[in-house]
Figure 1 (cartoon, rainbow, N blue to C red):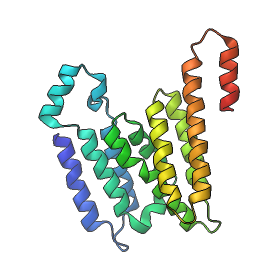
Figure 2: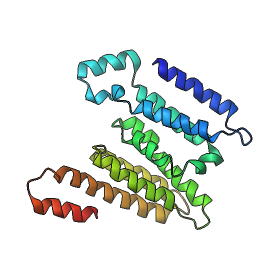
Figure 3: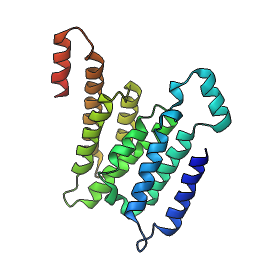
Length: 213
């Protein structure tokens, strides 16, 4: 809790002194995001790993601090404005880690950052697409699912939110929808592959491997 208060102090200083065009400090902002993500994903805050009694006790006393800092990460991302492009693709992995935390409100608040990244690269690149974001998300998703993170609920929510945002966008609707469905399909195959890896049947494992490839 003490540490969270300190991080929140940093956010106000970053916003007031290091955000405008003249004084923007890339390294400081980068450090902030990595620090906040490390805090949010720290094992001692993963409430679902505790017994119900311990979880209730922590929530009653402190609340779910992951949500508090997660909403702050989201706000700080949107505060970046034109500086956002400087954090693509490097921030895709850390934001993915945040969205994979199995807390529904946190996921709903942070998954839309992916759409914002797509939109940002789409507007910035001359060829009107988002290859840096796309490649990075697919690579990091593969690593995270292999590491045991991600679930069926995440797949459903990711597809739903990406499709909702893309369909509202005049120019991103077609390519965005195609990407959302691609990522959802990949995630489904990766989750199947992870589940089947301990299966006795060699055929099942081979089938899943082919699907992922």
